[in-house]
Length: 278
Image 1 (cartoon, rainbow, N blue to C red):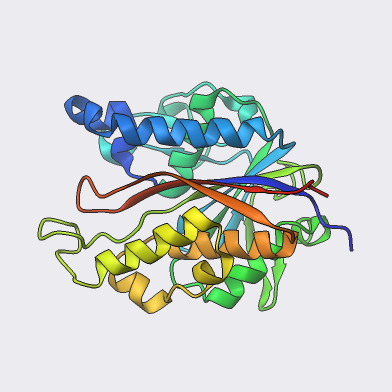
Image 2: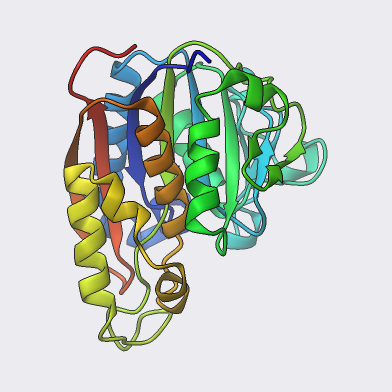
């Protein structure tokens, strides 16, 4: 079995306020985070992938073809966010064909790629928040196997549901991953999940794992604790860990941002192999 070479991965959060039009007058409060995300995406593109797969939390585990789109309609912005680079001009929701199927995480990822101006082919995988760690790891390994992608991304527990053409973003060539996920939402009393003393050590452990490209530590992040702390990044991070383990070799991580400006922890990191990519 010949695996697709994984050349790099960028990890970003997905708060809707990252989008200036959504944030409005508060936009400047996330300038530093926005710049860190732009930098991570720029480094991902500089690794010269032939295609990009977006990973983010969603209501169910499903692969989404490049023809799908997301929307900021529920945040008061009548704006369509296409995943496909061939449909890079945003339109109003009224002009969109079909429902907006990208969850918030993947919508923000598509927005970041559109902001970067890349025309690289792409697809996306939404990962259910309660997906077990073992299945996340299998899902990550499956990203590097073109045969599994063409068959609907088989995992140890069977095929993942597919929306659209799962292969329309391409299934071969050098692969880059854009991984979307937030840390705990329980850092202070006014956090979405109120204040939880477990949140800070949880976020510190994840921060170290992302900074060190530590796949074992990411793979060991507890799903139940993550759910209790409203950390949406756990499952996508564990898919990343599975992909990097499958790719093999030594990897280096760099942390670009770690803070909780609204009581939710946002982390930005970049992973790259230290040796030649197969």
